[in-house]
Length: 313
Image (cartoon, rainbow, N blue to C red; front, side):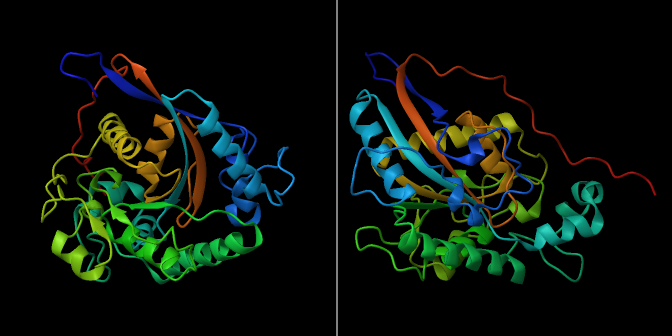
């Protein structure tokens, strides 16, 4: 961001560590189940006598961080949720990753299953229901604050995941479930038809209460049938997404429903350790954003790559 005649500024993102088990190198992502350990929130001291639960303590700490730090610094807690199991998550292991990348991901169906803009499976829906039930207990038993803002990828598996997870929860009147569909929160883009979104009209028809960005085109103009998006381009667009949210959303408690690749990119941007999520899982990340003078340090842009050649059988 820059003034026409003034200095240029950018947001410098970082993770505030020490609050969650997922921050720690000894926490194993493969065996970690967020529903068994209170989202991974650690115990820590507080000065407030009326505070009863860890989440109330954390809420107090977060409020103090935003109140006491410099005016050019913001803190937000981001719950990054991966969608439930999609049809493509079933098909890839069925054929193997190599065959998936060179052949099947480029198609829409194998004659039995269809994975264009992949929908949730029965297992995926049950994973979203598990998250819903866990959150319902968290809000009551742990007095965990509900999200103030909800953001979701435009791909159907995320649109459905966030609906199943949140639409039936009893939420505070001031924190209603009104998700915003963010085009840039989508998965690594290109080649794979599972990552090509449906039309704007489809989303409006099937998810009428969702807010669509005015810039979202009727049809998917970002997806390429020829090139897979490299990590550098993914991180660049996710940085634009974060800048947009920090510029325009004053809320502190945010829910993101997205994908494995996109969540990995968000973790890279804020300096969090890699923490792969299984389908239906969620990771909370406390993000610090400092408005710094200058130009954001850049990274060399990678070229996108076409689909690999299949090995001859």
